[in-house]
Amino acid sequence: MKAGPARWLAESGWFPERDIGEQADELIRWRLRDAERQGCPLTVFPKAGDLIRCYGLLRIPHPKSGERALVMDPRAGYEGDAADIAELAANLGQRLFPVGYETPDLSLLLVDEEERFFYLHHTGAYYCGSGAHEMFTGFINNVDTPDAEDFFVR
Image 1 (cartoon, one colour):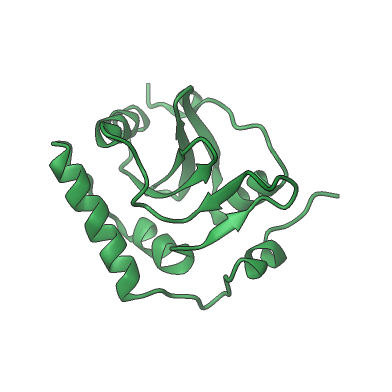
Image 2 (tube, helix red, strand yellow):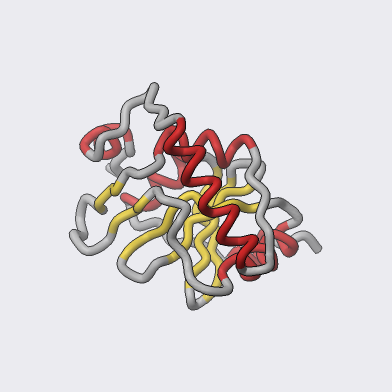
């Protein structure tokens, strides 16, 4: 039977009413400033802000692989990532905002306005599920992530 995320998240410090408040606002402001510095502004939207408030700053290790973890910090990235995020957003027809990343290879975890999750990895972009529960469940159960291209607006 596949594992669900509730206990796993709780072991990492999460609880249903968790809200990091002002810390979330600072994380978002940092990411917005960095995208502006890169010359490719991002826009935060309510779903992204809510996710950062709820899960922000958690490091959530994979239950079966000590080297893999989800780190819920939108400040991670690389030079030029804002342009890559904007390009993926245009292809999806939805705004995207980074909410974290996966270690060890710094795959950026992005969410769109419909709360669909995508990885932006050096090998391409991948779909990770709809809603936080599905995304977290897919991560802990090593569910294959289809290409984001399958979700592009044609």
